[in-house]
Image (cartoon, rainbow, N blue to C red; front, top):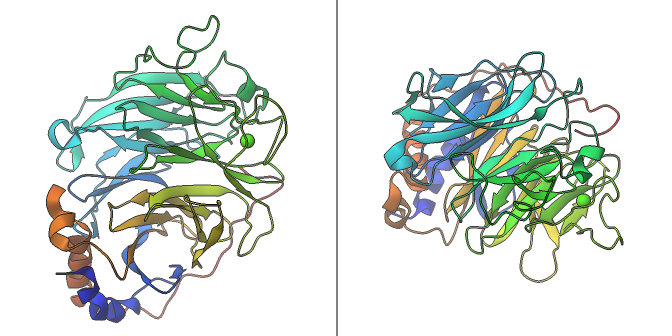
Length: 405
Ligand SMILES: [Ca+2]
């Protein structure tokens, strides 16, 4: 059964959408998977069986299974969640279905607070007690609690990539002696791959894959080409989408947006700080869908579509989101977006699908629970629910002072 056969059901549940879900352009459908109830989400990973694991800044991993947010978190870590610190990234092992390994990036509290990447083992929807294995310690953080990076993600090469912000110290981005302001590349056990660009450079940290980044909050790999796209949050002027190549210097703080400095790599695309349909305050999530790159801005509530073939032109895709923080592929049929919402515990998860040309459910389900099955599960659950309460949460804005984070 094609996904479009669910169209009527989706219209029926549209009235149950929370106030803050977005409006997508014609030809695509947005389905509310979890309307509210996620506290300060920071990132997510989609399992081969269709489960979505969401990190909460406060240290919990939440599980969305068959379209429902499970009450019990899979795990709860003790983290430093000041400012932009906390549990900030999750990746699932390429062999997750058989080994249950999940990788987490979070801020270890204490006098020498620092970010750490750990491996944990999940059994079903819970962490195996005592299974945490730290694999990477990043440099101690200063008193600054912003520009803290977040994403960790496996590349098609089986290596784990780690986004590290510059801790509000631009000099970190241009030195190879520490891990801040970089994208890192490690083996799943935390060791340094011998083919890393600075693995043999005297005085350089071998984990560094690319540098000159300010706050690569989210990045992703193109499943078709293997290209690595990183969203680098800007300072006062521009938000960047960078194509990350081994050993390249992406310019911060020498350049922001386009520059003409030899040796520095310009972004593929950038946008300015005019809050509105084309500008924003901080680039957050990104994912590849239908061969193009979709990216979100935290303050402007939109997702835009950047053409990856031909000139890199961006076009409108979704508006009206509330502090969208992460985009992740749901396979060839669509993608998820995660938003923080506008108050405590108002985070939600939404699924975007194309109305036409969506693969048959049978092909989507080759690796387990596919998109069509998730939509079906949501439809069945919604059909059992009474109409939503008229009491809606108050509209609130996210205050971003001074510069961006
Ligand atoms: Ca740059």
